[in-house]
Length: 322
Length: 160
Image (cartoon, one colour):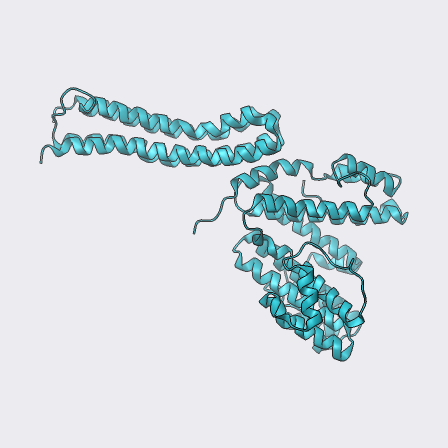
């Protein structure tokens, strides 16, 4: 079948891109004196719904706007499921822990996912995961059993995080969209590097690393695990021979600097889509650009709320898509 | 067998109208899809969008013109249709540049038009420049039109 062109959708996205925050607008937000002032400025730029929301509500509204727009633009929204799997697995983690601790909180779930929260919660309560998609069933059961028998919530998280990454990578590769495949590969590699660095610092075992590091093409799992078991220097040395050699400096600086490096690299990869008039790639790029924008604004607002020094916040600002 | 000349000549005329017309239909359709997207977000751009959408429509007109000239020359629209198979094949060959280049250039031009709508979306003040890119594709449709037209007139004058 010929590749779908998404001509109408991409033309609408071209106009929507005009509303994305630019670097100068981020600077404007940085110059605001308080979180309230930032929210007012964002509201003037069309963020939020009523102009009366708090920061979390405003960001939630903005995220909903992305998905409502996509539902309008594409007939079958499942083409973007790869961006929602991490939400599903987050909800699964939250449901397993909620059932395990027998708590009643319901504000721990993310509304945007491919599986309704009720279905996930009921599956966990009944310990019957057949209602979940096939890719979730095995890992859900494994994570549930681990938490039930060992009480080790970190291991439960690790099992589900790995499953989420592997599912996302597989689905992105199956989509045959180069941009998505590249994005997923980078996300998985970044998560693996993070796990390797943290595991080294907390002296985790090989078994833990084997269980938590996902397979990906750009990193050799065995070499990374061996390096993580040795020293941080070994991890840096191994990375020098991979596509992530430039990341070493950022990793040495801090985990947030590395996260920023990854986000900026994703923006660099998706930026050429600004001039691509066809296919699903510009739509996917727009979703990633909006997510990046929301993440940047969240960091900025939280910095302003806690009266953190502007220089410190500025260091954490991501490169913008536009 | 000699009577087949008119069949080939008519086939040529039909192909010129078909190829160029089908290309234009696809092209204008593609431009319309992108145009709808743009106008949904900014209705004030309708006039400029319409111009970009219609650029790939010219090939259909050229195809019609070639088909019409051919029909006139071969006597289908009146007069005598008395020529041999060789002349009929020559008419068919004369129509092919317009049929093929018309189809291909209309689609290529539509893609350029859609891309130019991106310029219109982001930099409406650069509308003039945005029109140049798809307009360049028109050159090749005009060249094909010229060759088809000269060939048909040349073939008409041949005594074979």
